[in-house]
Amino acid sequence: MKSPQIRSPRKPKGQGAERREEILDAAQGLFAQKGVHAVSTRQIAEIAGISQPALYAYFTTKDDIAAELCVRAFAILGQRMADARVGYTPTTENFDRCLRVYIDFGLDHPDAYRVAFMLEKSVDGSFLEKTGGKPMAAGYQVFQVFVEMVGELHAGGLMAGDDVMAATQSLWAGLHGLVSLLIARPEFPWIDRETLIATHVAMLRRGALK
Image 1 (cartoon, rainbow, N blue to C red):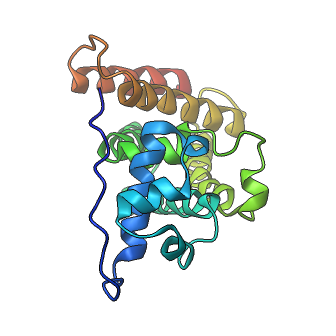
Image 2: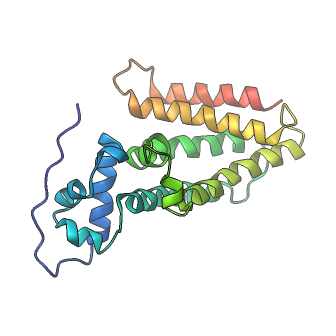
């Protein structure tokens, strides 16, 4: 059972240098717990310890907050992927390392992962339209890193099939399945986590590579 959100004391006027970050932190916790569509800006403001009008000085809508959180999550993942690909050559060892980077990101930042990958952002599906497609663009940049990695494996004759995009999307689905289950179902009697991750990565490798 999740601990109840504790309302922060109202901040005196003038202590606002870090308010944007506090709003984002409050929203991320609420979104991860309840889902984006079930949270109001009033609730976010209460947790952040500010008034609802003060929140609107930083973000016009709840969707704007969710969009920023998505973009930030993708930026962290993208940087980790970029770091993993410094001096990268298409080998099975580096393939495993890049898959592990994705898994570690999700498990290191479960709330960020939930908001970016696991939550419906708007009931009517208009989230992307309302936010100018910024989260999708940021996420697609990270996805392109996976496309490049798989493309290099294909060019090096290591990939089992010839459809780079199909292989990339399948790998992403496999990684997301493991990460989302470990985040959403911690009560399940999983085997040792490191053993499970290593087994999962090995199975994805055997399916993707020759």
